[in-house]
Image (spheres, rainbow, N blue to C red):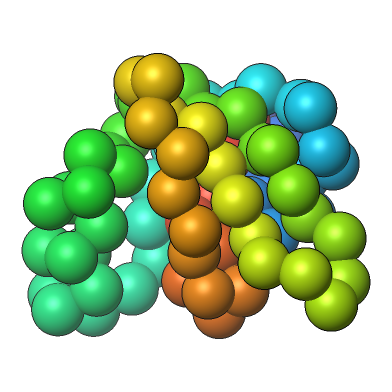
Amino acid sequence: MTAIEQKQTRPLSTVRNGETVKIARVEAGRGLNSRLASMGLVPNVQITVVNNTHPGPFVILVKGSKMMLGRGMAHKIMVI
């Protein structure tokens, strides 16, 4: 990842409904990284945010499948 891409990254938790982004990196320990990888949430995967409204669930669309994430998890996924 270039320095410019690094500066442009932001947490998935800040992405608005309907916006499509790409995972740049995951800022988490081995356990959470493994869990997210098993869900297909790895660098360069595109994600569309379906629902990011409080207090409702954080819902994303990945490769045609909807998934719910905890907001803490979403905050550790950096996207561009």
